[in-house]
Every structure is written in structure tokens, then in C-alpha cells.
Image (cartoon, rainbow, N blue to C red; front, top):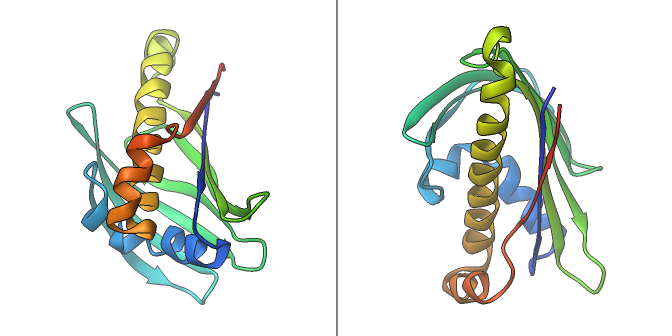
Length: 166
């Protein structure tokens, strides 16, 4: 199964970065590729169901996922309950960066759900998901740092993309 890993160091405290990561309903307001995120069910403070619509290279990808939040570890695991992909699982993680600030990471394992076309489509989908994830992390950074974040994001290195082969 293909894997996409994206990580970005942000000059914001881990608590602030964590608050921004788990506030998924605000994503459409700060991320161009995210059309909507709606919390459809909240079982408790650690478990929720969310419905997503994200633009990915001209197409809209829709899914519903179950989220499990661990505020102590600052990790948010998710898995697709239903949607456009065959499988979509992963997690967000926020950690303290050496020397201050935070490291925010998004890890996704996916299967497009079309076995006969997987060899051809998985690399294209992995590249598109990695680009989208990097844009999401950059938007979180910009939101956390305000207007000064825009200049910093343009001046420094972009999020680190890592695509693992299936």
C-alpha cells in the first residue's frame, strides 16, 4: 500500500500547533484545496466522525473518517469509513522541535481501490496526495504565524515530502 509522509517545522509552540491541527472544521477557511470538513458525530472528546471534500488535481475527493484524538501524545489517528478511495488511513502528529517550535507531520497510507489500475494510478495518487498534504501543512503554518508566516514560509524550505513505494 502506498504511503505519503509530509513533515514541517513550525515556529509555534506545540500546544498551538496541536490546537490548529485538531480544528479540522477551520481547514476550509485557510486551505485552498479543502472544500469542506464537517464533524458529523462527536462520541466524546477523543472520538469523532468527520466528512471531508478535498480538491485533488481538478477532482473532488470525498470521504467520511473516524478520528481518534490523543491530546497527551498530540496524535490524531484517522481511517476512512466510506468514500472515494479503497482505503485511507493515517495520522497527524505534533511534537516539540529541537531548539523550540513544533514539528507537524501527516502520514497517510492509501489504496485507490482499483486493483487492475493500481500500478499505474498509485504513483500519481501518491504524488497528488503528497502535494496536497504539503499545502495543508504550509497553510497551517501560515495560519499559526499570521502575516509574518507568509514571508517565513516563502523564505524557508517547504515541507519535506516523503513518498514510500507500495
